[in-house]
Length: 60
Image 1 (cartoon, one colour):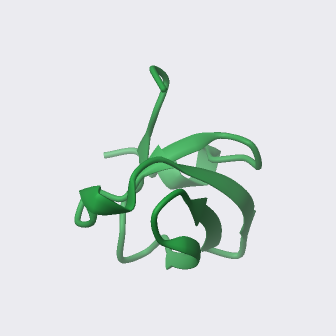
Image 2 (cartoon, one colour; image 1 turned 90 degrees about the horizontal axis):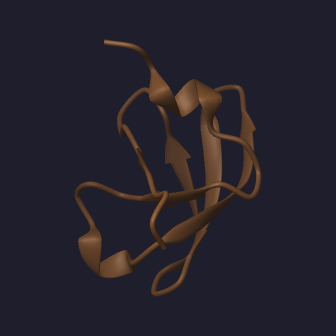
């Protein structure tokens, strides 16, 4: 499986697969395997990309 997290760039929209109640989030940065995402319902969250595979959103 390809690591889709590696292609995430600032401005892209994503969902956290284990936390659907967080809503859609916007990637703020993706540096060294740490992805900072600003979620509508959870605020700013730093994701360890080795533990969570974020889902890109194209229809929001």
